[in-house]
Structure formats: structure tokens, C-alpha cells
Length: 538
Image (cartoon, rainbow, N blue to C red; front, side):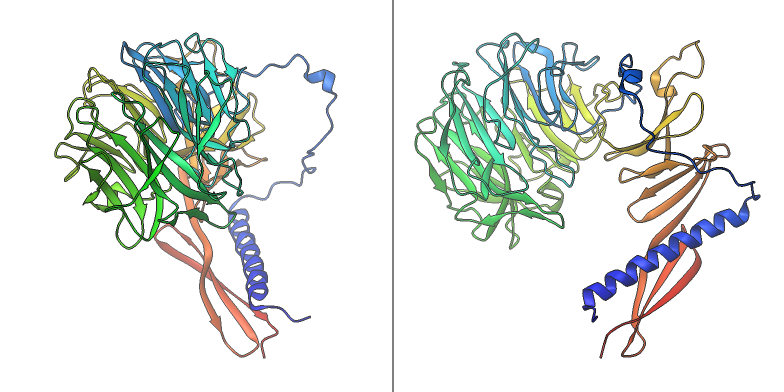
């Protein structure tokens, strides 16, 4: 049977990786004293359900924050904030981030949060849209919108269950029964659920007031507090495929739309905006000067960057195309205007940036963690705001000079879990945008510790993982990180690392296909295995 070129390469690569893993195993086993053979470990043994009935889940940590893409607050409660994690639900603080309490467990069908909005007219009314819009390779689907009328103590599902990811949500500034939602849609499929939705009865019913097509949804909204009939919406074609992400579409579909009647009618704004492919869009209105609107757009042809309109969206100008403001745009791309100074604007991206000259230049502000997402600024005191990133949510009361900690939020996204055979056993996992972790299943002594952080430690590898302890010797732990494989000794603290990937591809004859596989310690060449395969080439 003849093999296609792709199949020949796949077979060769598979065999090559098998050779590499076998060689690494041989190197380690040869260096160790041979132990007597033991019976193979038994797995997948059925357990009687009645034996598990008395078991209860308990949190063993780590209390190290995970990715947060939704935050909110209220102007009359300067120390109260909400955050929505992409895998940990909704949390609330009433002491400016010193402590956080989960308020969504037992009510929500999904832990992925896309947006939070507190009604300005009544801080007891809180809307939460599920389904984070930062659709990286790990995505949890949204399940619609929830509403609380008692400041988060209880919640009710109020619709849009099939909407998928809902990335933005705004409440009318004087009428808590009116709200708008930007529905991004199912990230894995086309669908008619995409669009901008509006409720006029507190969520009892929702009306789709803006729709482009089954591929293009909406990712952002901006409502003018002084005239809530004036609304801007950012359209984005975004989907995840097993092999890639689609971020962007034709400019005549994506970009910025505007309504002057609360969403009944819309116009597509184009003057001065990109004309080719347009990707993710975020925007904000300057409360200090509502004629000024800021937008940050992903676009091709060098047209991506920060745009400013001085005439309520009629015309736009690209004022800053600095690369670090629009890096990895499908994942970040957030802009927020200071509510008291029209020239002050913030951009959240890989870094966190502030401009004091209407976006002409920016300076970085340090945050407790990188990969920055959303923020909410107190309209009466812009030095008070909450900002979120891949490490959690942090509060500042002094304009970003100091922050609350992210080490009090058990919201880490753990990509996989493994346990060892110690007693008490340890639990292993890889945290998104962080290190691998090793956490004891119970404290090693009954004396307690000053802080739970003293009990857990980082292991070999990184966020991609996996991290796996040796079933024979838990002091030996294996980890992985984006093509690099680690073997760590927890007793000595030493770690060896190897790059595992094909490095040379050659064709020696018309029928021989060869790949050289290199396994090397970090910075030090170790050995190359050359594997050749007879192919059906003619």
C-alpha cells in the first residue's frame, strides 16, 4: 500500500519519538541500581459506590489565583468588587481584595465567567454572563446569564443558555431592568446565537437587536452613562479549531457598530477604521468627554492599534500602533478610559499600560502577574480600581502603586492531576500560565503553618505539563514544558532537562526518508539518534 508524504512523515515522527523516549528511559535506568522486579501496579479497579458515600471534597490548595477575565465594582462601595474566573466562578471581596468569598457555587452550571455588571442604580443587582471570551486553547463553554438581587447571596438563571461565550455586559445607569449583552457565540461552531441582546424586563426576556452572521459575534460594548441610548458594539469573528484559531474577518462585517436609540437601530462605523481584515475589538467612551471614544483593534496591513474618535465615532484616527499594545490580540485587547480625565487611558495586554496624552504614548505599570485582561475603575475616584490577569484579580487604592495579593484565590486552572504512593500522598498538577505544583493531601504535622503557601512547592515542567511522579519512587518526578522533558529529584533538588523534538529532516535517496532526533540537556548537546524509513517514493 502506498503512503502519502504526510502519512510517511507521521509514521516516521511517531517511531522517532518512541525511540527518543526509550533512549531517555535507558539512560536513567542504566544509572540506577537495578531493583528486584515487582508486581505491576494495578489500576482501574472497580470500587463499590457505597464505600465512597461518606467522602467529601475539601480544598487542599494552592491559594494562588488563576486566570480572571471579568471584574466589576460599584462607585458607592469603594472596597467591594467582584471577579469572574475562567474556571473558578464568581468571587466577591468587601475589603479591597484582602479576602475573597465565592458566591456562585451551587447556583451556576459553568465555572467560566465572561462578564460582570453591577447596576449603578442599585448595587444589590448584579448580572453575570458566563463563557469567557478569551478563547485560548482551553475553553469552557458558557451557559447564559445569571442575576442576583441581593448582592450575590443568591442567583437566578435568566436566559441565553445556548449563547456560548458572552464577553461583555452593561446595565442601564438608571434602570436596573435594562441591560445589553455582547454574545460572541459558540467558539467551536457557526450559529445564529451570535449578536447583541437587550432585556427591558430584568432578564425575563431577551431580544436580539444586532446580528451580522453565523460566524461573526460581538465581543465588546460601551454605553454612554450620560446618554444610555448611545451604544457602541465591537464585532469579532472568532472560532477555535483543533489546529488553529480564527480571529478576524472582512471589515464590512467586523469592527465597530453604533446605536443612538438604545439598540433599536445600528450603523456600521467605517471612516478612518481598517479596511482589510478586522479582528478583536474593544472600546470605551470617555465619561469626562463623551465625544471622545477609544478603541483598540486587531487588523492586518499594519492597521492594528489604538484608534481615537473626537466626534462620537463619526471619524477615527490610528494614534498608536506600538506592537506591545496589540500583542497576541485574540487573547488580550482591552482598553479603558479614565472617568475623570479624557486624556488618561489604559490598555491591558501582555503588560499593563497607561497613557496620559490620549493614547499617543504609554508607560508600563507593574502588576502582580502578567497576561493582563480586564479592569474596572471607580467613577468617583480613578485611583481605586480592580485589574485582572492570568494570575487572578488585584485591587489598588492608589492608582497601581501597590496591589492586593493574588495568593488568596483558589481559582488556579490545573490542566491535569496525578497522585503518588506516599502516605500521606501528594497531588501534582500544572497551572495555566504558571509553574507545576506539588501539594500535600494533608499537612505533614498537626502543629499547623503560618500560611498554606508553605505546604506546596513547584515541580519540574511548566503550565503545559504534565507532571507525573514515579510510581516506584515519589522523590523522582517527571515534567514537561513545551517540548522539553524534565526529570527532577525532590530529595536533592536537582533537575535534568531534555529537548525532545525532530531537528533534521533529510532524504538520502529516492526511497529512504531520514530524521535525526536530538535529546540534549539544557544548553549541552548529548546525543542524536538517526532514524531512516523505507518509503514508497518513486
